[in-house]
Length: 559
Image 1 (tube, rainbow, N blue to C red):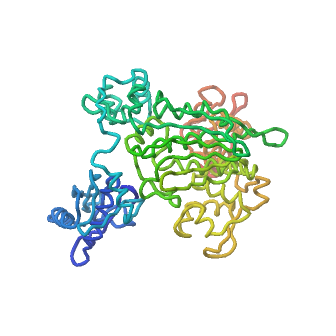
Image 2 (image 1 turned 180 degrees about the vertical axis):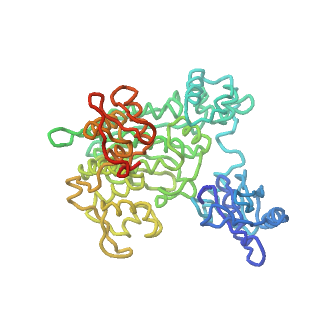
Image 3 (image 1 turned 120 degrees about the vertical axis):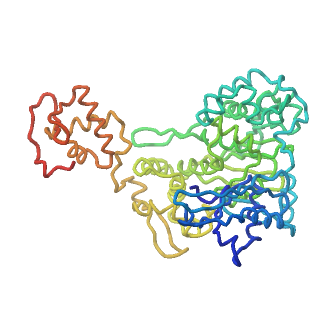
């Protein structure tokens, strides 16, 4: 069962039963889900559990009681309760809360929004923002221009439909739809008309130009004195958002400049601006901008940095302090289209990826600044510590790092040491305990060391390790290429003819699954590179040119 988060929360049955029932708290969570993207409350499952208690029975009248109690305390909230029997026999209620078409609130006038795994209050001016962003009919699906679906640009439509059918992110049942049904499925058309999203992605140039907020991108390059030396603009509305990402990357030659760094006897070429970072910034700017607000997207290039300026504030609930951990959809249909076209990663991971790439290249973390009318992201082209590049690459090769570990190690590698308090701030975490998923394994490996206690604890990477890249742990063979594994087995049997599979497995690499060793040996036998003698558990292997060898006694062999 999934963990609690943006779309899921768990409640004990005690929260809705007897004197301990807290209906106001439950109403708050329902309002928060309704104002976000909807969600599900699992009533009858404890926070730390994945299943209800064995033998738990939901009172037959509880679903109706839930509807009545929550309806009395909320406005514009819909409830869909279902009693479910778990594998262990216990019962619980799955309470689905659909996304509200208008602003939801409690009856006493309080507003909440689901942000990550918490229900946050919405107050002051943010209430007006919530009302504006939660119009009864989202901008994407409106058909106010009355552009007939027959007016699509056939080239753009054909390219989009082919890309969706070729994507492994699109379900087979969706791929089976007709072209017309596929456009309806992605909210690109409704009835006989194109939606605003359809005009944006599939419409002809003059129809796209009629959208007051169709995206326009300007690239401005300045020298060290702040003087403008180059300008490019994509403002004629011939390109849809997907094509804009590709055009900007290809049309700006500065994005493909590369640094040459010494690497022993050779030279290592590092991009001035990584393609992944630039594309993620462009996708974020296009997908998450408010299409109800006018304004161009600006790419301001300076000798030492790039600023990406997007009109409008961050989505309600997202701040520069929680951007690494919070996901709020503003244009959900455009985001889904970009995701299914493989132009963006899973929802909410784009900024994480930017952090990961920049820090692993020895560059500073991106800087995010919000104003009332714009959001600005700044990335720097300078490499603070070139040795970080090799360090992260070697650490990843040795330990198969997670994204969080790469980000944390990238931060530490750029500093002599960081306190727990500084790391918590840099990673936008709430407490020292939240550092565990980021640093637990690097601490176990000895890659990261500590001094001190509590929030004064100092985390650091041994300078000698950073310079020498001398990891204590040997490189794992779990990802060894098939041809290398075949060669290893062949060499091992050459040294130890008459070996059984257990002996070969133990010497070549115990961390490799035995089933993979067995498949490789079978392939070598089929190719005539090994000869097998004996049957079942007594089978031994030798090279074709050697006679049989008794090997070890059966009692001493691993099987």
